[in-house]
Length: 221
Ligand SMILES: [Zn+2]
Picture (cartoon, rainbow, N blue to C red):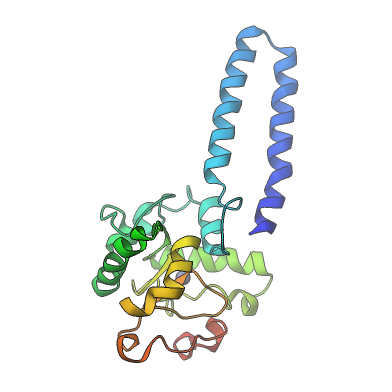
C-alpha cells in the first residue's frame, strides 16, 4: 500500500511542476485554464487515494485495480470506488454467488447500525480480469511463486466463480468480529479483506484461516 503511494508521489510532483513551468511562459487565459485543470487533477488524485484514512490494510488488488481501471471494464468485474453490496447494476456485485451476496446484504444493515459501510473493493471477476491481475502481480512481486501468495489463477480463483468478495478496511474489520454470525469468514491470514461464505460457521464458527492461498488445497493446480 505505502509502496504504491510513495512511487506515485514523484510522478505527481513532476507533472505539476512541468505544468507550472508551462504556465509561466503562457498568457493569462492559459493561467486560468491551468489552475482549473490543476484543481481538477488534485480532486481526482485525492478521490483515488485510499491510503490516508485506512484503519486496516487494504487489498493490493484494490491498488492494482485503481491503477488500471481504464484497462478493465466493469463488464470484467472492475468496480468503481465506493461500490456497495447493494449495487446490482455493477457486474462485479451482481455476478456474485446469490448466497454470498444474500449474507453480505443481511450483514450490511447491522454493520451500518455500527456506523460501518461495506465497500466492495473487488467481487466477481472475469477470467480475463483475473489473468491480468495475476500478470500484474507477477511483475509487482517479482516471481510467480510470490504472486501466488496474493493472486490466484483464473481456474482456481474464488473471485472468478463469484464465491469471494474483497471488502474495504472498515467493513472487513467489522466482519472479523461479526462475520461468523452471517457465515462470512476470512479465509487467508494475509488477506484480511477477503471473505467467503462458510455455512458451517453458523454451528462451529469460522474455520481456521490458511496463512496464505498457497496453503489452500483448492489453489493446487
Ligand atoms: Zn479476494
